[in-house]
Length: 154
Length: 307
Image 1: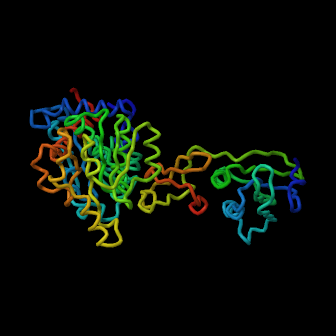
Image 2 (image 1 turned 135 degrees about the vertical axis):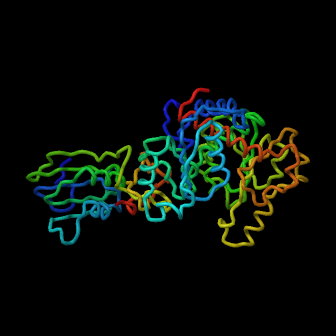
Image 3 (image 1 turned 30 degrees about the vertical axis):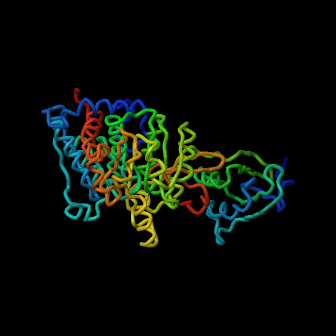
């Protein structure tokens, strides 16, 4: 399946297409990538698009941008089925799934206000990750985060 | 030494074999806990870092290291230490771990002990981290049951605040390693969280829930009472009503099994009437004493020493 055919919006020449984002999470993905109004790149967002695999999905396309591993980890937490397509000269030169890590450090805030990671101590938050559904368990206070993970992203 | 444990942070780090090892060692150490001279850890220094008030835990750790021939240091009141100047726990731990052979830590933040273990060059023992874990309490509770009743195939009732009391949760997990039947006795608003109950059932033990102590009194070998805290209730009147119905008096014990033991981590407020103290069922003061041999066993496991 070619990306050109799949997308509702104009293809990009160079950049990244993030497909199979959980419906409703596209704006969080934009936030993760750090795109603001002043970014300057061409950014297209499609939300609630019909999908064979997942009923509804979101898609984000960014011109001239590739993602780093921290951003990929964050996306995997809110959309574990997301696929990343790297585009060069309008062609998909590489396509892969995001991979949910078994442990994450420093990318999600613990939502337990009494957790030691929410104090002045020099310690980064750290969670073990279970899949399907995504559940994060704080390494320090054992608190569980299973909903609205996007709200806790650092 | 524990096979795979350098610190004592959470009961989740313990296998049944490791718990059994501690309990067996505690039994061997009991004569020394009662005063028989012992020099097993005579060259060892234990740091007691208590960021929150504690009577039993602090004194019993202090007693434990001294009964083993070792000694202890502490920073006294938090107000008199560098903590009041804003020093982080991480820095305090790095400094103190160079002074002492092991650190006992009580701290108001959940996960504080786990973090301390990241920074410490010596073993850290969690003596309570906020609403989090308090593993040596669980170990001494298990030891009390082993000594005063038996640990396997018993019926035990956990009574009181089963929702917020995380110590009760880790106690229940530990009990599940011993195949016991558990009765959960609590007011509806303080019931054990569903995910913990499911976990326990998944581990193959039977759980029954009720809101009345009297329902279970004739069916159990161990009655484990806990405190119901005022701050869990929005209304004072609601608290008083609930606290009143979870008060154990000696007149309620007519249906109890002869060998029933009654436990409580103490301090009690009014959950157990003083009239119960004189009955053969009362076990909470012995339980308090058992904190000493149990903590001695933990110290010997972590610091070596020939038994």
